[in-house]
Image (tube, rainbow, N blue to C red):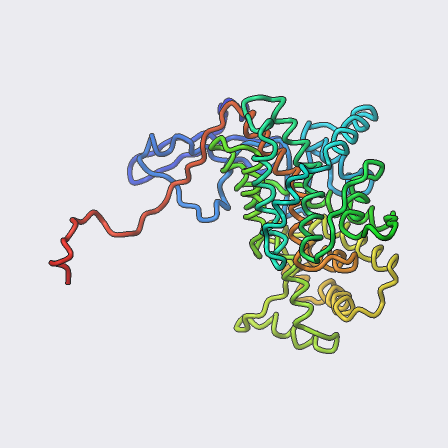
Length: 436
């Protein structure tokens, strides 16, 4: 069948009372079939009710595929495990943007273009100084990314393919610089300019942790770890922030505004803030000897306490990203020689219990990527307020790829979800003197 043209050999029958309608059934490359309800309202005068859109495909996409039951995550058909172990983040960026892995020449050209766009307009430093010193780095990032449309207005014409690509490269290149600036501003240190001779991850670590009075050399083990974290977070299908970017983009908004909208959505604790919540949970537990108490509470349905960083809304199997993140986490801890951090001791013991305890195994409450990434980022030296900023940095390429795909889709329309109205029926206005 041809999903793009909406033709299908299969149909689904909808029967309400004595009337029936045939609805097309579309099939993707892999994954479950979908019932096309695009003409449902016109044919029946009714529309569907699906809070959270958990049973609704909002678009057609060729970028990312997830099979939550089997624990599979594919970027353009490539397993996340292979990309994280064998490639680097900029190669993944190229894949998500262009659809294929680059040749050596294409990779060199792409790396060069990204590297030469890492600096931000010098006037942006003045923009940062308008924030309070104690401003949350995510608040700063949302504002600074939105402000890019004012500084780089020569790449906001979404009808121009060249401008779309320039904006895409700029976003991928400048996000680490803006993220590092947000961090430096929050701790009262001077901004550090990017360095073209460094790779993407090493450059970011240097901008975050170097100071002008000392020479900084990135540890290759730590650089590789942060690069893997970026790969693992690069895209994740039609999640809340990606859907936000697509919805904002459907109105014709410029790409910088769309990405700022995605960052704002990601800031929510139920989405990008999950790794920060997991680390706060470890702090609440406090010590290894209190773990049994909290395990008991987690199993009690009447106790509001929940173990953060375990299980996943999509993955009903082990999160494939968590397996890679687990290995990376232990590599970082080993490289840094961290053995006496109480939170890390708690995390290691919780991990052991979750992988062996029948209660967790039966319910498939395995440690997820947020559990391991929070521990890893803490070990690397990032405060919890920066965790979601790093998530946004990594997810930028996914947002850009999804936005670009949507803009170039000839069937794209402005998003307009419907509602089930349960308010007052029509009534007449009563003058205030007559109201009781």
